[in-house]
Image (cartoon, rainbow, N blue to C red; front, side, top):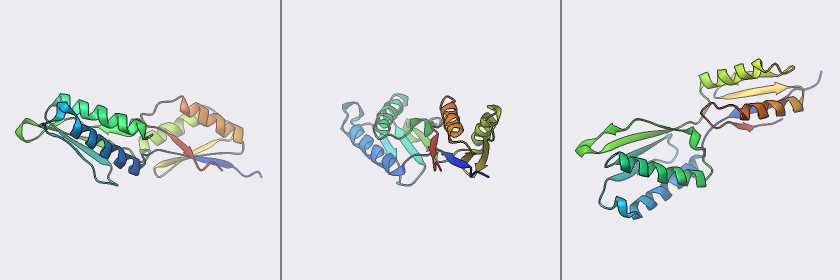
Length: 166
């Protein structure tokens, strides 16, 4: 019996790059003229999966998001893996907003990936959920490469990473 080839599908953000992007965004916001004398803060602790914005109004929140988004893109952090919460009213008429970093594939998305792979009717290809990852196995490397190609055409709202190819 031939040994099965496998690969894992995961997702996540490099938290060190997120911290670097947040620090760059803080510096840019501190130096921008339109933020002088205004409440504009980005809260982030290294290793955390939440980024907090605190701003004067909706316009400032959106401007802060644009600055942070640009810094994250420059550092190859997948912006698809960021989920913006709804702005909440804070003290003195300011607004707060939380941004959550997706660090693993959620169960419902993992099930959709497994269902997609099974619907494609690949020969002898198996897909199974393993925690916050999905493992794909098949005796044929060509078939695994076809699975990767087909999955890249799908949109699950997160960036998929393909690794541990054995």
